[in-house]
Amino acid sequence: MGDYSQQILPINELTIEQINSRFRDINYLIENVLSLIKIDSYVGDGIKSRRYTGIGFTPKLVIIFVYIVSSNVSEYHIISIITDSNKLISDGFVINNDGRNVNNNEKSVTYEYVAFK
Image 1 (cartoon, helix red, strand yellow):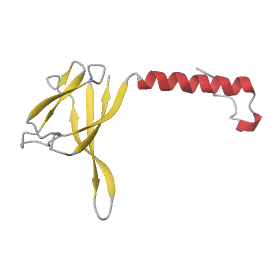
Image 2 (tube, rainbow, N blue to C red):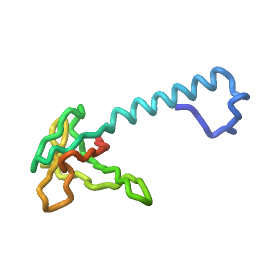
Image 3 (cartoon, one colour):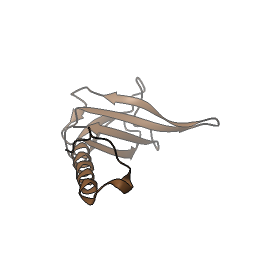
Image 4 (cartoon, one colour):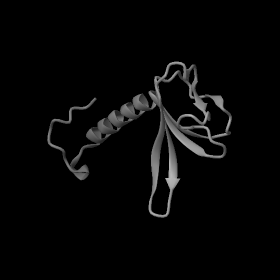
């Protein structure tokens, strides 16, 4: 990775080599970070317990969000953080609609998640 301890120059004062070096560094970071996470969504089907698979790795942590729209505000809410090894399975995670805890599989609700490798 490049040394950014030197003075930061405006883009129009950078040499082609400096610009290419920064793009290589950014590309390296993106490729490596994106290989450690998966961001996607699913639509709940209301089933009590369901395996959600296809993320490409066994996650260590999954954070599930739901987008809530009200008359005053629209925002994402974290509704579930999965760290239980029984719910983190090969290639995915287990979602629930058991009525006891926060449900992350209510029928017709779109959920978004970030899974960490």
